Amino acid sequence: MPSTSILTYFFVAFFAIFVASAPLAVPLPRDVFSPPVIYPGKGTVWHVGERHNVTWNLHNAPKQITNSKGMIVLVKNHTMVDLDTPLAEGFDIRTPYHEITVPQVEAGHDYQILVFGDSGNVGEKFTILP
Ligand SMILES: *[C@@H]1O[C@H](CO)[C@@H](O)[C@H](O)[C@H]1NC(C)=O
Ligand SMILES: *[C@@H]1O[C@H](CO)[C@@H](O)[C@H](O)[C@H]1NC(C)=O
Image (cartoon, rainbow, N blue to C red):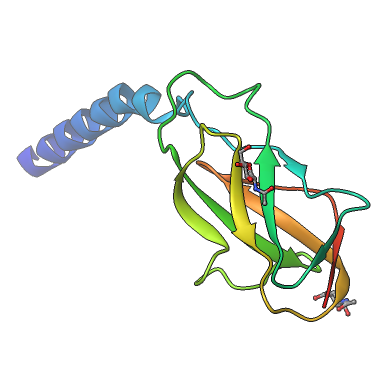
């Protein structure tokens, strides 16, 4: 049956392509960077309207960063407060601090700062007061 051999051929060819291409899909980018937040941390108290420098550690940053644009998001009780309007975005993550204004949010002791490079890292819980 000729159709069987054609099918077999296509199957073998497809399998060969799949096997040949699979190793290319495996390596993860080596130059991703998720910056560890240093400040604010445990014991930090911010008041609404104040300006503060969020800071992060560049020690483990690769020399080449795929996405050098950073974003800072406020987190409360493990939930992002407003991802649509982050505290800051579009700044260069290779500078280890960025000034933000504390937004008008309810008082709480379970706030955290999330800094994104290629992926995100949250800092320790801190307090925001009116
Ligand atoms: C943030 O850091 C920069 C550079 O050190 C400094 O000029 C600026 O005054 C700081 N901002 C605040 C709110 O401390
Ligand atoms: C925090 O979030 C959890 C899960 O969404 C919820 O059950 C809990 O009540 C929240 N705690 C506070 C203090 O809002």
